[in-house]
Length: 61
Image (cartoon, rainbow, N blue to C red; front, top):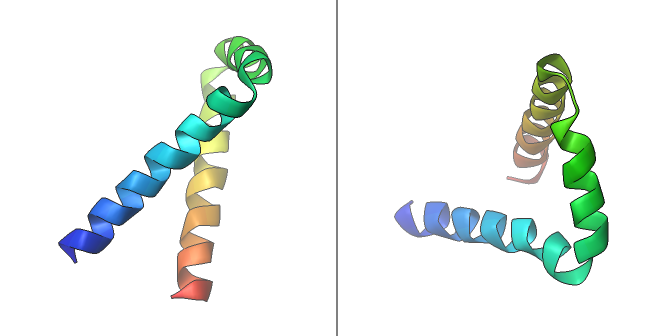
């Protein structure tokens, strides 16, 4: 269980770092636009992301 959790966290770090490493200008543009979002829009994006992750876990595990 511990190894799986550590591997999952490591994959999150890898995926989070991939976009700014490969496309730094695009990442900067996205972050600039993200700062201008309302709290509600950010929460909706978070909910969609959580739901997609849960669906992937349910279907592929």
